[in-house]
Image 1 (cartoon, each protein chain N blue to C red):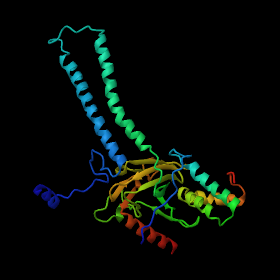
Image 2 (image 1 turned 90 degrees about the vertical axis):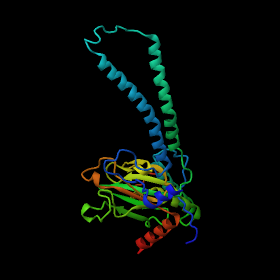
Image 3 (image 1 turned 45 degrees about the vertical axis):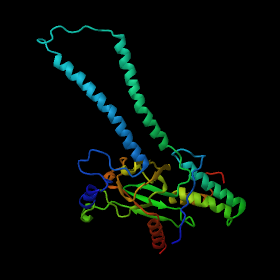
Image 4 (image 1 turned 60 degrees about the horizontal axis):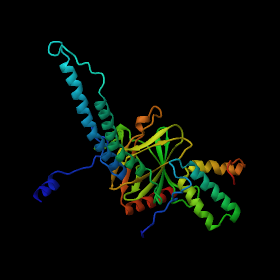
Amino acid sequence: MMIHEFFDRFLTIAFCDAAEPWQLGFQDAATPIMQGIIDLHHDILFFLILILVFVLWMLVRALWHFNENTNPIPQRIVHGTTIEIIWTIFPSIILMFIAIPSFALLYSMDEVVVDPAVTIKAIGHQWYWTYEYSDYNRSDEQSLTFDSYMIPEDDLELGQLRLLEVDNRVVVPAQTHLRMIITSADVLHSWAVPSLGVKCDAVPGRLNQTSILIQREGVYYGQCSEICGTNHAFMPIVVEAVNFKDYGTWVSNQLCQQSN
Amino acid sequence: MADVELKTAPADFRFPTTNQTRHCFTRYVEFHKCVNAKGEESDDCMKFAKYYRSLCPGEWVEKWNEQRENGTFPGPL
């Protein structure tokens, strides 16, 4: 209990929802899909390390013993039915252990969400994103639409992230099924947010759908992930997940502003 | 603000895959077929209108509206 208090008082734990310098691992998961990807990665890495150690041992051993003075007479084995069977069956079993969680995740990612609560369209341009929230339209013209440009380095305030901050963030409700429709107005782009485990290509003339369920409130950063010209590196994505009530307030404020 | 219910176009099992282009187009065509059959102000048609507005980018809707006015819309209205 005292240790818990100690941690609470002196060590704040902040989530990693943006790229960190010299980062080695994944950003923290904010959706079930991303958590699934991280868990699969751990499963595979276990077998990967086993295989790596074994292969390295074989390699180093072969190099060590290949010495005219210490081992002048080489082995001349060319067949060995038993060992050939073993080194075929054993890797197949390992592959099966890898395939089971992999297919489980793959098929669960493909599950159709029957009733998303919100649809948000992300349209890629050279070199910014436009977001449309059209669930609240009463006619073809009205729409909650806004552009999202990167904040240039010169305009950053203290504490903001270079090449990641934008002027208008994508505000979404947490704990809600979202449907993202991604497309492009010109060339290929890709809408990617690592913490949410989402990467979806923006193809002109095509609407790509992806579902997200953000489990915790927070601000999540991502970057365009398909080469699209000179400022491909300068059109980031920022998703801000807020509680339901704040989302409602934000939507009504935006609609009021746009109608004025 | 009272408990607002968030609603959007539901998943359509005619279009189960990632590519929803045809879903958006079909909803737009369904709306206009409904309007041609039942008239402009019919409430049943508003359902289709909400669906296509949620799914289709504003630019696409504008372009199709223009095409309908010019008589060059490629869909089965």
